Image (cartoon, rainbow over all chains, first blue to last red; front, side, top):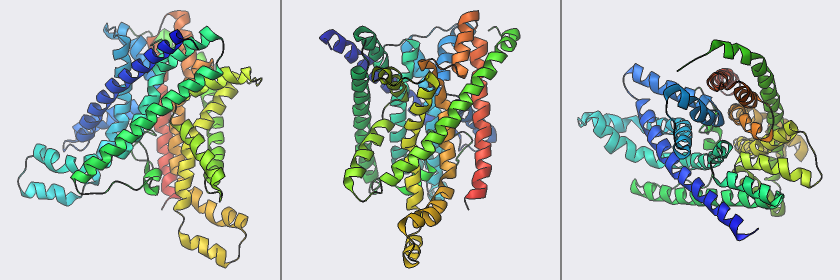
Length: 240
Length: 216
């Protein structure tokens, strides 16, 4: 491979990383807002938040990307820059998966904690901010780490729309060289390295956050979580 | 916003064709992932680390890289190596292989969840190793993992649109074809979007009733 082609690949890596950062920020915001709303005391709020989750988890991310790129512009007169269109589609889809994680972790906090907050006459906002979230957030990190890797894999989908991410630049290199084994192997390796780095980063974060509430991080993979893992899967609430 | 019902009815014949291909890919892909996942899970329990280590590395690699790029790899590299398969076959293999690395973890968890007493009882009864797996461990493990496997089937359904990139005409492929021929994007894309929500919702309801039966 010539240096020009490597430059192309590096540009692709940069676009992928940018897209990953933007869409994970949007996804995190969506998951916290929707996840917290799913524990709201008004049924209509819970219903709407649940409806959002079902719809966005129900469709395929690729279909969502097509929809944002092709249906949104004529329907509402918005023509988004590809980067923002990709961010929107990925962030909303993966945010729906994330909201399930947030809801699950909030539900897993001992109810006595919540009651303690009520007894001390904390406002609902204070209870959420000072009691629930500090205990729930460390528990969310392992599933969020899995979701982040799924999101990284999801960013490859925008290449179908001609956005110059890593997968797209890989296709260009294939066309230039008329040879595919090498470039696709490199591509897979680069994705793997990014995923590995993300997993490590989240491990460190988990350790730090858990130390903050006086807990040890999980030892390796645990069996129970594997059978209950639902973050990338299924609609209709917790199956399994 | 303009919505044209006649475009929807024009799209319907192609939609059913696409749905058929999607379901075919899903059924075959699930089959491969269930079988291959069990193979990986059993290999990961092999006594020699020269078996466990390579299997662990390969499956970890496949799980952490995008299915899209894996599909490109299979579709463009296999012919270079002299293996020519149809696009649908390539896609089914790709999706099955990718998800087998997920189902493998599910099987592993299911096997580990079988109480140690069951192993000890099998040893006490002097059952050969193969019989122990066949009649004691796997029946109990698989019962436990069915709901989790079902989750991955739904997840796989939502990844089938990726087969479009390797020229398989599943639902999204048909929708894109129709859209490009008629310059109407809104209707076909919305139809298949709704179809995905409906199918995956129905599947999750089915799964929940299955779960109630199997897991107590």
